[in-house]
Length: 206
Image (cartoon, rainbow, N blue to C red; front, side, top):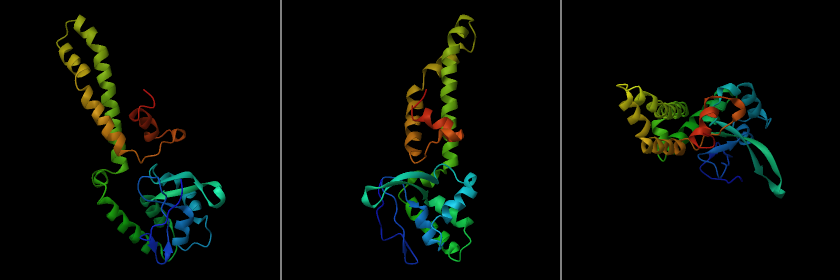
């Protein structure tokens, strides 16, 4: 992944260079530190480390970025929402103006992202879990049907219908959610709600 400059991301004379090949707008921690007028380029990373539990998976991640001389290094980057949260914790004179600037960009980005108008990452996580639970319930109904049929249970027909029908509907729902959550990074080591449901949603595990 490389960094590419875009003139529209200029805050008070500081040019921020968004990352290419990522969904949405992402800035490096060094760019944010410069825009927020921190003398220490690691100031933003230190803010993140202090308040890491406040950031969701879609707000910050670490990438291997190419620099001059084909050298690669690990760099922490932030989405617009992550940049806004960093500015909430920042104590520099320009932090308030920077938050307003980021919100203006977010408003512009939302115009081209219908899903962003409808759901937050937290809501998408809830929808992903609703799909996961419903999918498991359908498998359970399918497994239970033969026993209920043999028992001549009045509920056997309902279990058959729920266990056998709607497969196409569930799969189309999965595809839609997989597309809507493509910007979410999965971190299995965190063992959080996203880490437990994303591999199933993306068919990485069954």
